[in-house]
Image 1: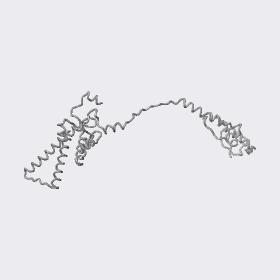
Image 2: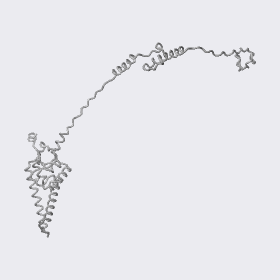
Image 3: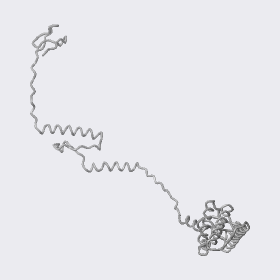
Image 4: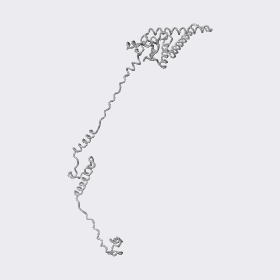
Length: 278
């Protein structure tokens, strides 16, 4: 152990009575007192811990009122004052009330138009008679007879030319089948070419008829192609597609239904007639 001179701060031995440098007397070292055990009961230290915990909780409650801590088991009811259940239940009520007052409700009403699919389906099923009425069945029959006459006339002219160049036209099952196939091919070319490129056959032009779609407008090329396909189907079924107009509610044929087109008068409907039809 060493002693430090209070005057010059020099280290001296433990037995020295004065500083060897400045001759300042040194105080005798007092023996260290042994620690004395302080008797403390269990209640004293528990009360001290509870008191300090209560002070800490009071300070913390001032900073964060909603914070809570589980009390110690040995704390007395006098030192640890926990909030009552009524106070705890009242705090969220105040916050919810304040939040409810500050909230702003926004209501947006969206009105969606109702889609009427029945009207659209009905317009595709029936032609618009107000814009362009369906021509009478008798008029279409006259136009069909004229077209049939032109087809037979063309087929007869083809056979005549065939005979003039030296060909033979025998009769029998096989020749008749060939004649029928050639006639059907001529029928299909006749209606397809005139329908797609001219919009109507010569018989329709002579009867002053034209082809329109179900809305009364001029048909598209796609609809004309479907009408040509309808002519082929009607011809393959022995012209049953043409006879279907006798039972159809709108007096339309198969080619009319397939292509959603029909025949109407070539002249536009007058304004007074249109008003009467409506």
